[in-house]
Length: 395
Ligand SMILES: *Cc1c(COP(=O)(O)O)cnc(C)c1O
Image (cartoon, rainbow, N blue to C red; front, side, top):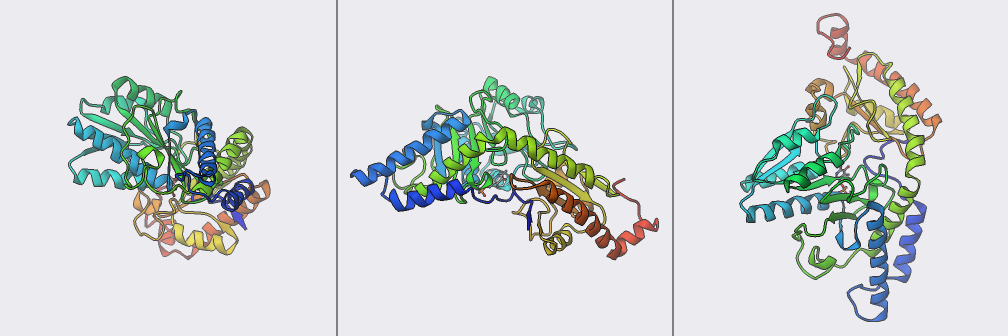
């Protein structure tokens, strides 16, 4: 099997698994309990918090453990919105190609009278700090812009956006779920106020993540109950998962440069090879994209059919976001970069990871072009296009 869907989730690191097992066997106490077994669990929790903080340039107190990227995004946005509303500020800036954990939260806030402005991302899928600066108003409370896009891999200039927001006194949140463990993060240097990350995107367990919140930025809990996480998120901590996340993040950060160098060579070979397919287009910029991201649109095919046929050949890929698969509407990300509905339906995302090899690339470059040709041959619409009854959209 060739697994090239690492943007959907990653295989767990053996070191993270063994740390989790050890934790479940040895440190199963409740960290809020005062006896020794509880306090041992509290120490393990604190150790994980410190290690995660170091990995992103934060202080341990600025780390809140959550159930993952979606919860972190929700909490960051609701918290900033509430603190803004108290001061009469109700304007929020974001981008058109955020993850649904951000976009759907913003839609909810619109129902409650907040004004949400989604910046256009252009044909290559990015926003500039200047766009952000021009959109900021007196009543802007929050800018939420992702660090790297999960479908087309583009990397946003977060440090510049952070600088603009800091100067103007606006909270800056970034969904760094695709970035963490893959490209460098330094919340202090990049002037990030809030940041979301999720363990299962960097070989940690599912169902656990972090919301970093800079000291002094207000944080409201979404879950009420006990005083865990300094009152910012109630519920007994999922210590094994948190420990697994800390190990996986440290491991990913330790090998980040070498992995990125190796994987981006595979990525570039795939991009070069797939670009040979006629009437195909790369989504996003050739450079300045995540080391493992390859995203294409192929005219005249259905992405879903392509995925099923690739699966039969042992290749696990995606047509974009795992969250939208099964729905008939095309990806909002591809529409945001200006793809037509028709072309957006023919998308393929390959997200490479540490385990992929040159042999994988070779096999993909054999199977994908063949399968695209096969699907096109079966399509009456494609025959019409070839016959000149319909114009090609992609050259
Ligand atoms: C996967 C992902 C999320 C959601 O994270 P979960 O931990 O699965 O909730 C949020 N944002 C981006 C960019 C993602 O890729």
